[in-house]
Image (tube, protein in one colour):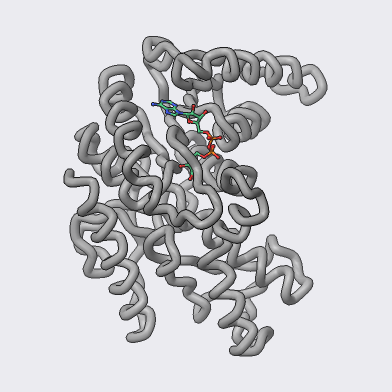
Length: 311
Ligand code: APR
């Protein structure tokens, strides 16, 4: 079987880690694309990653480029192009700059690889994935946003830290937008099948939910310059791997809803099946009144940032 081609658009903090993880998992040959000003940086990262291979034993090829022609034939794009947050900024503050970048990226991807599966990471995520979808005109199964995987991973981490049990056995999901209105569905969270509500007090669970909602900001504050990159990269790789290996993983992703959870025409975090056809299905389930109210609130926030794109 021919190797897949997986291209990172943006070779900064997340892009560099994406390239490393994709190569180590042998998802395919890896291209790191960035603007001409950063061409040396991505060519350098690619060479460095090539020279890591003898110690690691994988055979993926990694190249860096700022020429759109080099991304032709890509099977999966992961987009991190744009600027990250600084302390005091919320994700919405990035809209002005990152929207222009996303329009440029969508136009070029459409030209070079119209059948590719596209995972968007750039923030504000809910608006960026929508902008990519609108500008590219891609079918909805080919476009998805990475947010819920990361937010759920953060929720799982905090539950594991609280209980002291393996993070591997913690399952849970976070619905809605990638902002402070996201909805951690604590009711369904378990550790090895045991409801977390039986393991952690209601009061502590509330604190864990609150920390999850602002977990990205907690890291932005610590860094002082830039935002999280290891966990965002790994979360997107999980999605790319499910597509490439047709695993049909069920991952909370920003997917286009057309009636699911009473959401129409917006990308919002929902449990999503990712397989060889890309976004194969959104899994619906009944929500409590409180969860419904939470989802409506997060939908209002998503609608607001999407309206600002004027697309
Ligand atoms: N095409 C391709 N790459 C671009 C473009 C463009 N038009 N414009 C900017 N870039 C590149 C920058 O040159 C930089 O190398 O995007 C890269 C972004 O990398 P970082 O600044 O290190 O940011 P990172 O931490 O990787 O986050 C990227 O993901 O999570 C979000 O909020 C985060 O929007 C931010 C994005």
